[in-house]
Amino acid sequence: MAATTYPRLTRQHRQSFFLLGVRGASKSIWARAQFPDALCIELLDEARYQDYLTDPSLFAANLQTARRGAGW
Image (cartoon, rainbow, N blue to C red; front, side, top):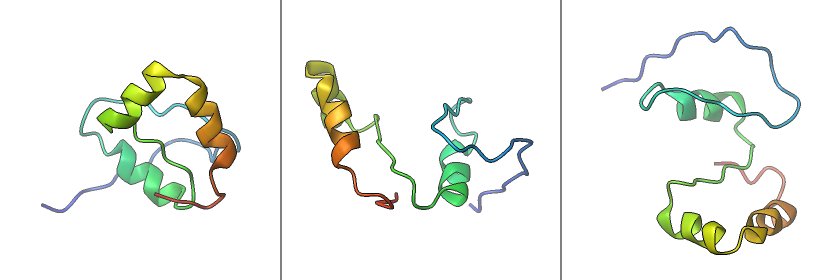
């Protein structure tokens, strides 16, 4: 099944932002296309999610040590 994309009525963001929408609305597809070099932290990864719940400072540590352009 091929994904159909629709143009979004948004401006290009210069800082971090939240992208909210219903499940299956192609948020990830859009984000990967718009920001191919962006850092993506997948909170649906259960092990990572549990690590962040146990020690929230790991989130900040991951951001500080992430390579720019690490991509998806």
